[in-house]
Each structure stands twice: as C-alpha cells, then as structure tokens.
Amino acid sequence: MKNPLSPPDPTRPIRPLPNFIFMSRWLQLPLYLGLILAQGVYVFHFWVELVDLIGAAMGNQAALQHVLDAVSIAGTVRPTKLTESTIMLVVLGLIDVVMISNLLIMVIVGGYETFVSRMNLESHPDQPEWLSHVNASVLKVKLATAIIGISSIHLLKTFINASSYDAKTLLAQTGIHITFLISALAIAACDRLMAPANHTNTNESH
Image (cartoon, rainbow, N blue to C red; front, side, top):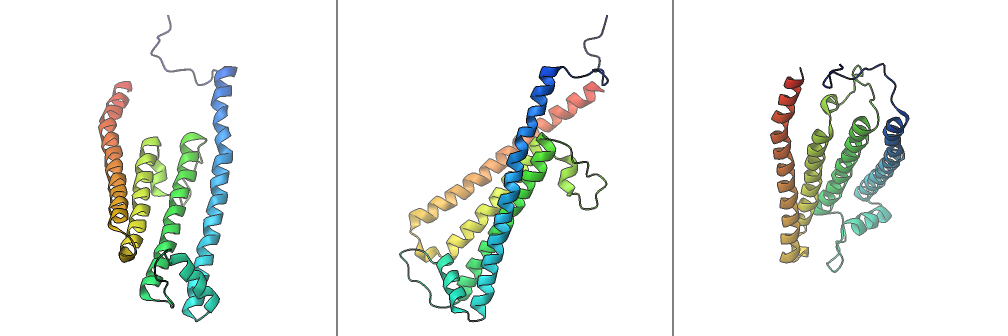
C-alpha cells in the first residue's frame, strides 16, 4: 500500500486541469510589463525635473517658472527666485521619484520571482542580495519599509513648508505616517511569529 505521506513522484505528469490552473500565473506577466513602462515614465519625469532645476540654477527663466510651479502651494505667496528651500523641495521630489522607482523594482523583480517564474539569477554578479531569499512574506516587509521611506519624504516636504499648512493638515499627515510605521511593525511581527512555525514544519518534514 502506498504511503500517503510519501513525496510525489517528480516524473509523474501534471493533470490537465491543475496544469491549466498553474499556467494561469502567466496572466500576471502583462501587469509586470506595465510596471516596467511606469518605471520608464518615472525615469523621464526625473530627468525633466533635474534639467529644470539645473536650468533654473543657471538663470533660465522658463526653467525657474517650471520649478516654482512644481513646489508652490496654492493660496500661498509664490517665491520669485530659486531659494535654498525651493532647491531642497525639488531635491526631495527627486529622491521621492528614486524611492518609488526602487519600490517598483522590488515589486517587478520580487513579484515575478515569487508568483510567476524563477529567474535563475544565482550566478549573476548583479543579483540583489534580498532576491536570494525572497518570498511573499519577505516581499511584504520590504514593501512596507519602502512605503515608510516614501511617506517620510512627503512628511519632510510638508514640514519644510509647515507655515503654508494648517495644524489639522500637519497632524493628519503625521498620523498617516505613524499608521504606516505601525503597519510595518505589525507585518514584521507577524512574519517573526510565523518563521519559527515554518522552521519547525521544515524540520519535521526531514
């Protein structure tokens, strides 16, 4: 009698229905390709903002107007020249674009590796360190951490222009950022609680 706990035969072909269901994971491929296109849009936006900042620093009035349009807040006094605060806001905006781009890379590469197909990058010299042990749980923690970083940049931009916001807006943005922090801690705590159980199950299987 065959032992029900014995490992499945790797040479046994997959039945048509399970194989069809498993192949449905490739429906996610257009989603990741779309995120790659979104990454291209962010790269273009980054260079447009950077060129405007350099042009404004060199006295180009059209570039200066674009920069001021990007950082000015409706209903407040508009600056008339490139100031230290304006430069800082533009640079923070560029950092924000980079961090969102990093988030996209984690979703594209980590999501494809986890949910679609292996990339077999073990021998590649540029393989990300985190990709060697990526799974759905690790990906969630890293995404939560990236979101906190993006939220921190937005909060810093708000505090630089704190005089242009009312107390209610400042408290609301701070509360949202704290919510992100608590959510990330909760995800990490759940991951830590589940890790010993997974490790125990792995040892029992051996």
